[in-house]
Length: 362
Figure 1 (tube, one colour):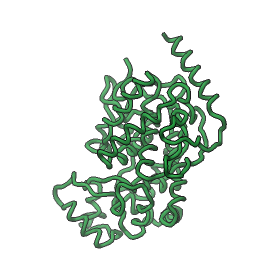
Figure 2 (cartoon, helix red, strand yellow):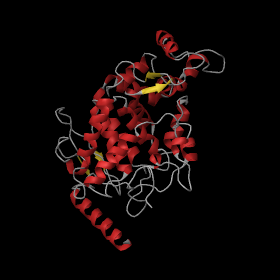
Figure 3 (tube, one colour):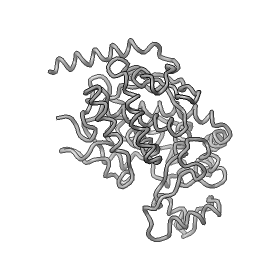
Figure 4 (tube, one colour):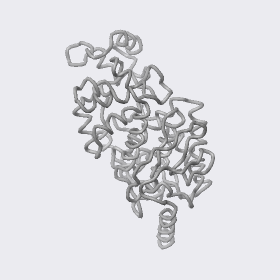
């Protein structure tokens, strides 16, 4: 069996190499219903936009499933369409899953694992507990992929495909997506507690968290733009309303009418699970309104508003530039998503392709 697995992995990699025509290229112009070379490069049906050209990183290839599971992206999109139609918040939840996965021991689907014999699930960490959503959608995608292409598409790649698909279905950009990640056999509760930026981060703290992952100021501002969709719990912004600096006063950078509106959603005591949109202008549409709101003092989280109020020249300039130019934001967001998706992937013979995303193979 070991020799067969080795032969199969080698065969799959060779086919993937053959199906990827160039290291630097634009994605194949397929619509969502047309196969799309296994999900690496696809267009946006009806929208006229084309995926953003990006560098293919060593070990990951846009055409990785071109022969072994060419329908992979179509299956992912089909499940996403149903899930997001039923619950529009799900798009943001799936984007967040990919982010919380990649920032902890790389993009290896460790965030999906339940408790194992030798580790505690990352789902129990402070940033994730009672917060992360979308696991059932990933389970459904995996189930359909296993039926179509058994033991082929990894859970880590499902997270990356789901993040891109959720962005597109919310009106955002597509991008050429390198694939071929494999799944870890362990999770890191400690890593999850240490490596995911908290919502009350200062600008310097945010930069430290991102630079630790090989990401820069442009990536920080671009990826923060994912908050153009989704909701946040009261507990993540209550400090701004009542005791921002330990003096029982609100955050002075909050626009006053917005501050009063938030107080009705998030009382001083209780209500921690009440939710408010991260982008009050268009909470289910992926656009650049998030940056416009920051300019008017209506960023929901401290970590949103400090992109401007932190007085760091580069991030301030980017907030203003993205507020003025949606296409510029979309372009940078796609590039930064690819960059984030290439944090420490398991490739080749490392890791495994899980049969069930919540547990390692026996």
